[in-house]
Length: 93
Image (cartoon, rainbow, N blue to C red):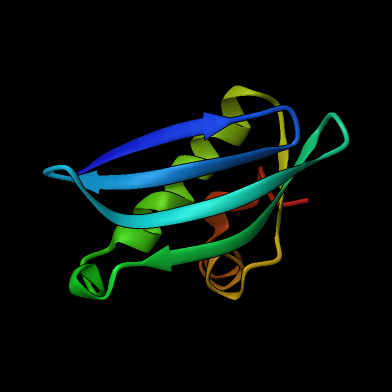
């Protein structure tokens, strides 16, 4: 599974790709200079239960750490994953 990141000035996306197929996506918006807001996480039904969503959350946390950002998880899935584990305490806003 390869996770690609793309962004513009105010929005961005992490896309999980498996053999050319989009397995899942996470969409975020920039909030000021130091925060991103995860708005939506979606996993293709044929990939559900395989940890794709969790990989997207992990990639967003890596991105936040590398860029000194905090994450506001408005997406219910991302919020549940991030609040359940202390691994993300350093990036949660």
